Structures are given as structure tokens and as C-alpha cells.
Length: 130
Image (tube, rainbow, N blue to C red; front, side, top):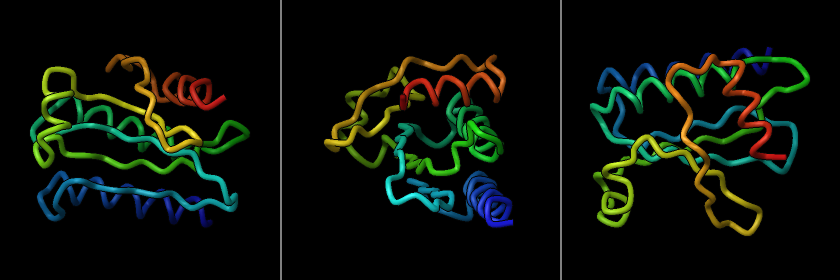
């Protein structure tokens, strides 16, 4: 029940953001019973259809259950237009997905094709964290 409620709550945050009810950057954390959460950062900007598509697929991947669940992953969406450093670095590259390592440094992950299924995205993210 907790996973379902977290998925619904997180999904609502994404839908509300797309409808202009919430300002970027959007942060979404799915519930976790483990103290060590895995962290992802998505560099994006409003009006980017590739970014929106990836956000939706990531949300769907987070809500999959089973032994390969990503329910302990925290996703932070960063609007590059709010930070000149991010905009310079990623303006021609978004969407850019990075994982936060245990030392707090970000590691850019390989680009995920918009054609990938949610299940493949889940497997790629699990591999990135292993």
C-alpha cells in the first residue's frame, strides 16, 4: 500500500508540474524503508518534450514492483534555466540524467533512448547503481 501511495503521490507531482501548478525544479522522492537511498538528477527545462517523455518513463520505472524495484531512488529534476552553470553545461544536451555517487559527486549516465521500454529503463538504472 505504501509503494502505491508513494507512486500515486509522485505521479500527481509530475502531472501537476506539467499543468503549471508547480514551479520547477521538481523533486520527487518515493518512500524507502532503507536508510541509504539512491539518487538521480535529471537536467531538464520547461517545454522540452524529450525531457517530459523521460520524466514520465522514469516515474513509471520507479512505480514497477518486484525484486528489481527502484522505490528507494530519489529523483530531483533541475530546470537548467534557473542556473547559468547548468544552462551552459547542458543547454544542447538535455535531457541529461546523472546519478549521485556516495561521495556526493554526480556521474552523467549514458543517454536513454526515448524508444526504450519502461522495463529496459529500469534494468539500465539498476545496472548504473550496481
